[in-house]
Length: 503
Image (cartoon, rainbow, N blue to C red):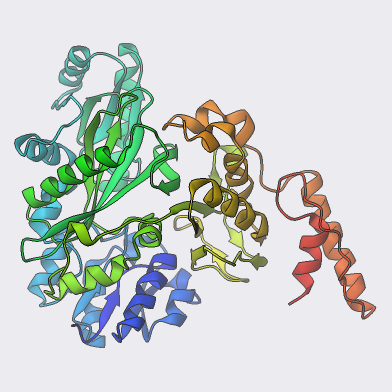
């Protein structure tokens, strides 16, 4: 096993990795930008080193600075988390040259799957079903390809991920404008403006399969996650198993076999996710492979009992999986809600600021992966994720009930959050029935996209805080605070104000 592991990331995922390292008895090293000097992951690691200014391009994305910290600290392995350098093949090669183990796939597998057009070609050769698509070196070639495929089509960045560089095009006359925007976004996000075109699957489910593969020829899948509830092609709610009737146990086994075949086709090593689009008839098509740990990995851990970070570390150290497909059993149902500092009513615009009050839900079957704390800054430099709130229960119905309860306990003041949005989803009849697809948010936006703390709710919080202060000044505990719910579905403003003083 490793002497010391550097975690080349920040926030909740850095903390998540550090916790497993501690359980394994492996010292951890954190890195931080100027904006993250007081971040929780810095406090939790055994050692921490500054790596530059707040912009990620000057800190977390500078591979040489990460490797310099390895030399200073004596770390002989790097866990990249997700994002930043986690899918950067050049960085993986730099690690190899420096004698540092990268906890993830090797550079060749990352390059094969990281470029979407190369990945499509590889999957076609391996017999994996893919969405019909085509490349083009010029706008005219892409126009001709789109015409052959038939509208609607989807423009996608070849080096893309996370919904960046993607545009749905309904009509031929809209393609050139959409292409310019997709290329501009791809160039900014990935430094690569290559774009290809795919036939758009109307009303699809986004189903992904978690895979693990070691360096000894063993590979398994750990069932599926349904990631269909998305905003701007970015996931916000995930669950496992999928509630979609077409995703039967037999279909999951079929998709799992295809995912394992895809991993073996590139000699993959580590944890990865093979993503599919599924149409209303249950036919599925390869979308992409993410060559890293996914944001939504906790729900797979909750239903399988596996620690995916531990498996990543063991595989990178050369240890065999030690179990086959038959040994992996899934139990119960898990749901993840990504809690962001953002305002759904304003197009999910980020809401940076200081977290003044934080009350995190707990109790049976509740897991909250977070790097937030009272007084923490939600920076405008990074993704405004506050936490990943996950629940587990024996059935989906019970899991939805548990998520409602957990969300209603969650109190965040100082920034807007999407907690009311998540509550609205949990109470939506289509979500409860499990009949949603990737167009769910647009189809139900009038019900879902309400502001987090506006109007009477904001006033109630201010009044509640003032009343709580008055009670405190008189030496009285506000124990009789009313427990009614506020109009946005979270705790009442009076109750929240009282809680904000009980610290």
